[in-house]
Structures are given as C-alpha cells and as structure tokens.
Length: 180
Image (cartoon, rainbow, N blue to C red):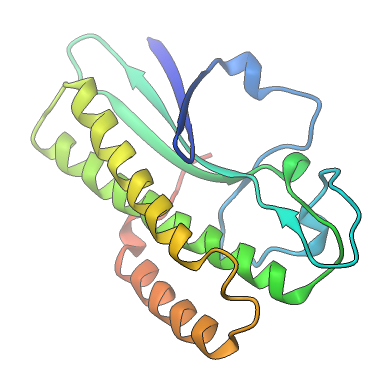
C-alpha cells in the first residue's frame, strides 16, 4: 500500500510526509461543531493594543492507493494552533475566525462531494481528483477575501452570513469529515 500526502494552505500546494506532521508543536485541530476559543490560539504574535491576529488553517488530503483499486481520498479541514494567534482577546475577531473556519469547512465538504462523484465514476485519474480539490479551495479563497476584516463591526451582516453558511453546511452534512 502506498500513501501519499498533500496539503493546500490557501493557494500554496505543499507536499507533506508523514514525518513532517509529527512535530513537537501543538497538534492540528480538526474542524468540529465545537466553537473556537481563545485557548486555541497558541502562536506567538505581535503585541498591540488593537485586535490583530492570524488564523492558520488548511485543507489537506491523503491518498491511499492499492493496485487495481480506486484511490481513497480523505480531505481534512484543520487549524494550526501553533501558528494562530491574537494580539488581544477580542470577541469579534474570534467570531470572524470561526466564520472563516466554517466557510472553509463548507468548501472541504464540497471537495469531498466532488471526490465521491469521481469515485462513483470509477476514475483513477489523480489529476482529476487534484483539480476538484484545488477548485474548491480556490472558491473558498475567493469567498474568504470578500469578507476579510469586514465582519468585526457589522453584527447584522455577520449574523446573516453565519446563518447562510450554517444552512449550507447542513445541506452538505453527508460530507462531514468522519475519519481521524
């Protein structure tokens, strides 16, 4: 059995080895319906009086291949607490990061759906799988840029968008990550 790992960190494609994932840093956190807390942000950032931060997350996947069988793709939506930080505890910034992570989960689920469709067609074309995953990541990036920094001071917009994306997550509930 051959295992190949790949990671998408927004627009950057970085191959990973199993050893690269086993560092002494904080373990990655898989997306769940549990809300982010300030304790999830363990990275060292700059100290400021205004709310600033970094939310380090990625959509990654593993491929398991066996001769004569369809490849098995597992798509993950993870947060990296070691590289995520906030200058000060700020509820609005935390809500924005939660929104971004939920949005990322929506596109991870869409990628899982597309991968399932390729499996249903019995495709063994690795490039086709990579394209459907990277397409959903690109859609996520575009969507994320639309809202970057504007949700903190617009609670009505935030509530409307949060409901919209939670409804979308529910529509793709079948494609929720169910593996470790």
